[in-house]
Amino acid sequence: MMTTRSPSGGDARHGTSLREVQLADLSALLALEEACFSGDRLGRRAMRAWIKRRERIFLVVEDDQGICADILVIRAGSWRLARIYSLAVHPRARGRSLARQLLAAAQQEALARGAEEMRLEVHVGNQAAIALYRSLGYTSFGSHDDYYHDHSAALRMQRRLRS
Image (tube, rainbow, N blue to C red):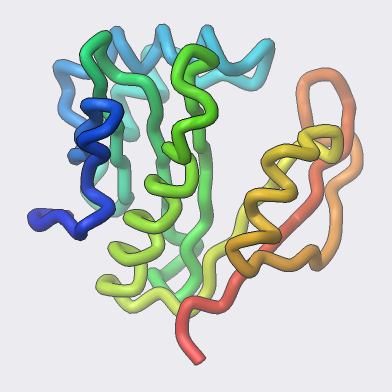
């Protein structure tokens, strides 16, 4: 469990703070899902289960209007392989490097848990996210056809965390 904050733990220019998720965040997280995703959203039951689960990394960013971004990282069998399950930044909060901040914090926490590699799936049409991941050292290693609710494909990406 993340208990300390790195220098990237907040952004004074935008009044944001990064912290672990809490059960009290459930409604705000569901609203964030609604604002960010047209489909493939986590429902109330699934979100509550992820919040309560111990073997995950679940971080949120708050600003003066509430939760504006989150990242959920799960383990794939063991923590040797960590998987970004969800990353969301509210449209009102985009352009503030919150996704980059969340990714850095999640990668740091995954490393502390013994992860050697981080993987994710991203919609093939989400060029902004793909560019962000590539700028952080993620490389493509495959795809999943018919992955999302609209039957579109997902690009699979990965990054080594340890050499």
